[in-house]
Length: 181
Picture 1: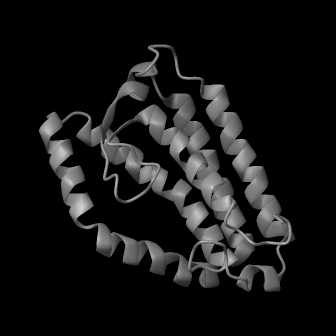
Picture 2 (picture 1 turned 45 degrees about the vertical axis):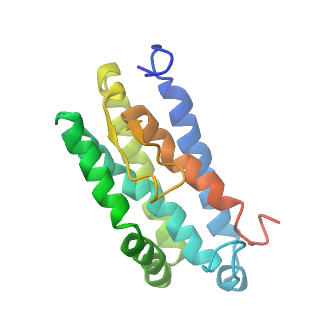
């Protein structure tokens, strides 16, 4: 249930958006040349292949965040607020890891494996989305807003299912791949 409107969450819209992103990601990695992948992006220190991994990682991260959300949704509100504050305090080390992980992972995986992983993660998110209850969609927790511009102070499970697509679309505009130009 949407916390804002009180109406049921539109699962199909989320499914459709996941599929849109999957198709776009497959197109991006499938049409990118080696030269494209090594080219710098706009507005980041990453190359295109590193940013593509970072975009994939937004989907990978959603699964453990769903688990954490289920745990923190059952705890007193102050616990979640304190946890988010502690994470916000650790923003600098988070950003270092957030930068370095794609630098190493993109070279190890390559575009084909990234596309394969993207498919598996999206398939898993579809299954989880189908199994979610309306009550489950409304559960939520406090988030470290300094970690990501798409994290709100408080997010619900429904918000979290929408998060990776927002993250994807934002970073897609920073790619300098020939297919994007």
